[in-house]
Amino acid sequence: MVSAQPGARGHRTGPQGRGWTTTADATAAQDLDAQLEPYRVELTGHCYRMPGSSLEAEDAVQDTLMRAWRSHGTFPGRSGLRSWLYRIATHVCLDMLSAGGRRARPMDLTGATPLARAALTPRPDSTWLEPVPDGRVLPSAQDPAEAVVAKESVRLAFVAALPQLPPRKRAVLLLREVPAWKASEVAELLDTAVASVNSALQRARATLAAWADRGARAAVSDPLDARQRTLLLDRCVRAFEGDDRAALTALPHGDAVMTMPPFDLWLSGAADITGFMTTVGASCAGSRLIPVAANGLPAYAPYEPDPEQGGWAPWALQVLEISAGRITGFRCFLDTARLFPLFEVPQQPAERHGPAVRDR
Image (cartoon, rainbow, N blue to C red):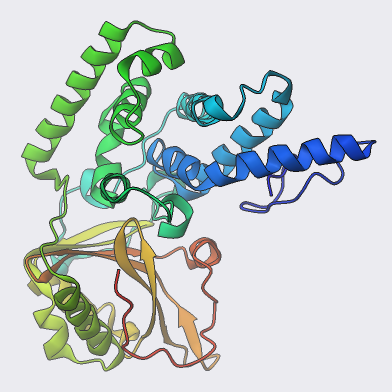
């Protein structure tokens, strides 16, 4: 249920405690909750794409639903509810982005570092693009074509490209291309002219195309069928869990990249990536991996052996980008204290998770 009071991210409560004094009031509250809640996932996707932060997206959606509750007297009815909520959510995100700052990937900020000069230099959490669980941003019941668009629009490479656009152009692009709003609807939301919306959309597309042409990897191709994809991911799990260095060496594409926020280091090329795994990152040998799904891509919650405390210690949330039968991106996010609860994986694995991989 929607919470009308601030609280922990993702926490939902019913209408209790809102000051309703009659049964009719409580019934009306429950009815409004029931109408708002089905939009939570797609609103979270919209609010994630705007700033590129899963945690800020949770806050933005909570704020959106609270504003909707406060304005329930002007509630437009079921036919206009979705548009009304998108309007509120977009303005919440625009207010959030007005504070400045752009989230990015390490390769958007610095050049690749050769393995011989690799240094782990952290930057503040607010610097980095964050991963998001598929279940938080991808509605389960969608038209197949809409599902493809939704999945592509939360890929890390696409979300990383969006900060190249000013916030209002970003909103225009997303509203026109993801929920496929009409130009007139976007113009009304942003209090501008239809011609301005069309012009902003054209310039936004040109900006992202130019950014992609500069080698920014704005898209990830994945021509593998389901069986080939599963076999590749199974190989990945077996290589990590078995500390099979030969198998690890065979996984990355020749021009693959590896990133590790909050560190600004990023590595380019299979040789440097596998070299890092077997030297600086050797403590991760023999990791156990729990499969999850992030940003429309396969991902894992890996745990490394903990020789001091015994058992296992979480070390990253790892998102994989795949192209032409090889892994082109190892996106390792090291803030497990924040990300593991978001992805609903434990800080300590409860049981052995072998190399079986769920098809995504």
